[in-house]
Image (cartoon, rainbow, N blue to C red; front, side, top):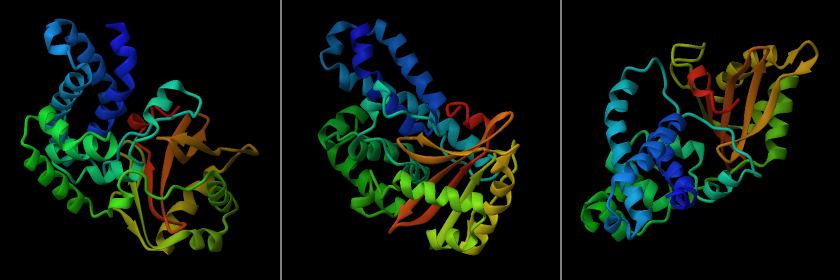
Length: 286
């Protein structure tokens, strides 16, 4: 059983995280599945990968049903929970290749639980429609329809699905430097004409309740708090972290990390900025 855990824990975490958007829920789901697997007859475990993924998908479906009601009552915008990753971490190396970008996780919130499961299994994890149909106990035709519907709802081109254009660290360093220096012109030049900033404070930290649009308003929303927080007793407190397998900005104070900013880059410009400030969602970044 330990060998099975070591072999599949990365895959199952990746599946659960992308289905729920929560690190905490994903960890709980994986733990719960491996506790319950002890009671499963051996004859049902001839294909452990498929059986474990089915258990995870079913558990996440139940979580999403209750989570949807909670998210409808959530104060302001709801964003997925980010997590700090390391290129040297063996766990991350397992999940790095096909972990959906943070921007794609945000788009997954538009989908029903069934659409989300089919999308993640097919586009992120590479399962065939036949395998997905068996896992979700649906027909192959139905799974294809669910995937097509999911792509339409998300409004993304096929080449952008799993890994949209990613910002390299040099580019993000330039953006961070412009923020610290208060270089408005430089910031504006790096923002897309149709840029949108979405913030999640959850009612527990100050954050814009509605998305902010236009370059000028986004730049203004960034410069105020970030310039104020960029230097504390002569020490910069904005840094770049490897978050969700991509570069993100981390803001610290004496009390610890209080803000994470994730960037969605398109045509070498920031199309979306996601600001996570809810302290409950920053536990896996510190």
